[in-house]
Length: 111
Length: 114
Image (cartoon, rainbow over all chains, first blue to last red):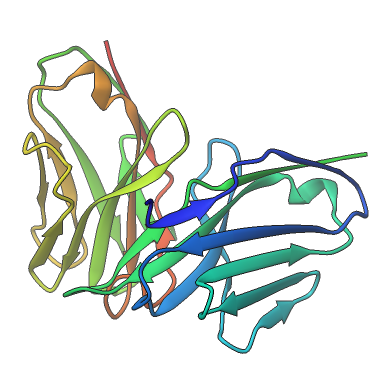
């Protein structure tokens, strides 16, 4: 079983749509969780951290379910500029934390 | 100022050569990483280096070796390059140990082995 799993997509949605991505992780001792965004031929950049209580940043909402070991990202009112790959990142424990990336979910927002 | 900078941005070389990729961060972070992103876009951790503690992903061939002259630099040296080494290599840094805080990435080095 992979450490961090995501549906690769692509998710092809019209502008204004709401889209949700899920990510599951295998290590129950994981302590930190993030969503990163990666544009084509660019480096990954932090989109938002994911807290146990859930958190929201504008049109983006992140949720963590420790019992089921999954993280979600909800994007409301999708914009063309949201088209990118969204990477789920989990901080793994075991000596030192090492951030482990999922394969990413590709989002294409069309007019 | 660029927070995490890598050089070169593009590297084309022949099989069997030895090459290095340099990485520098000016964020004062104590942890640096090297990731490999293959053609399927999967970002795979290669090394994590924190306060002189090196954590190696056991799947990385020993032809790859990180070298850290100081806390702000983590270079990647690759011996006897193979076709399968072609990928984008990202350097990153964070504060306080891997995975606990945001990681900042360099722009990547696109390595092509011919």
